[in-house]
View 1 (cartoon, rainbow, N blue to C red):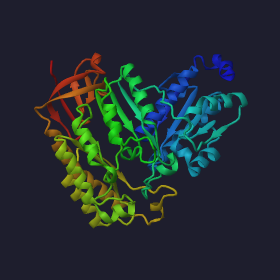
View 2 (view 1 turned 90 degrees about the horizontal axis):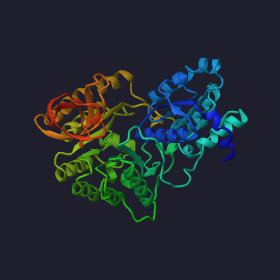
View 3 (view 1 turned 90 degrees about the vertical axis):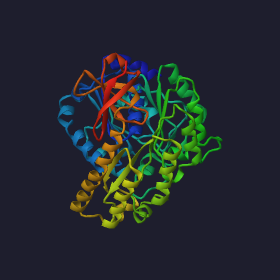
View 4 (view 1 turned 135 degrees about the vertical axis):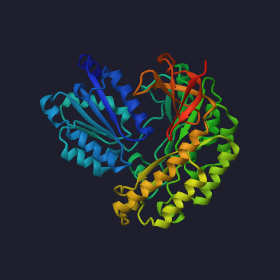
Length: 449
């Protein structure tokens, strides 16, 4: 493009910084943004203040992330005033919704470019438009555009996220994802397969397939691929040493998917299955479309067919109308299922959701229940990790420990975070570790030579 050529010298030597809020899909979006920026000529810096291009990739699922964004953007007002040539950008889920977007546009004049989750492929054009006109650019698309395989800068050279679908059709009453990411769209299976084959050729070993509800992949298409069929096909690609996926909806968890996991050794023995509540009354108000009895039956099916599988979950405490009896049923369900880990949240109302119209529960009651839930879960986590003592497990080393450069951290196929004394040159490699210690959240051991 002529305009890009015109600014080649401008981009040379420029630095960018990205702050990402939210889930793995947001992290993957930031990887795609990073690829585009480096293709223009930017280089990454971890120092936000020294960056020439500062981007916030936002999340709208939790209120805390929204408030944190406003605070961090506000902190740049002085920097922008002193260095007006710096480009400040806000993107992501929050910008797809009019309420949050209006806050950024009307109250944060220091922001130069605003775009949504569906505009990532157009980012270079948005930047060039801003440089050419000097005028603020606000561009929110309603269409993801062409379904090509995605180019991105992974955070490392051996693990990759791969989007297999976008959006969501479930409309849980507390969730704003259908408004922020749109309705469910599945990518073409051979585009996904081509992307993974390309990444294998680049040296990637572990892959995580991403979707708001991967279980419903292909339901609205004529591709002839269900999610279990796609998973089975990807597992057969030579070089895919580990295969993960997230997230799954319990109502769509089929026996076929369980059997595909059971029959492919490179599909990890780990399943994230959001429960949200143990009360059928609350689940109905959440519009989750399953009962707790059905949920437990699905969890038991996984454990029966795949011995040693680790289960994680999401749980919301203090959903509107939740009674003490409802909460007790959540605690009971946790004891029955015996989760290995959990993401726990205090309910926060999100704009334009059905649950936001319901009366909220007193903060003190919610905080008390939240703490009691943690008190229930942490001993279960500890016991599940303690069962690894004495076992030798395969670990993919991912990075140095933040607290000790002599300690490396990695994950087992059951997604246990493992610490081991080892050298930095083992990052990106599989090693055997004999487990000698554990906490509620980690396991640790010695390298098996």
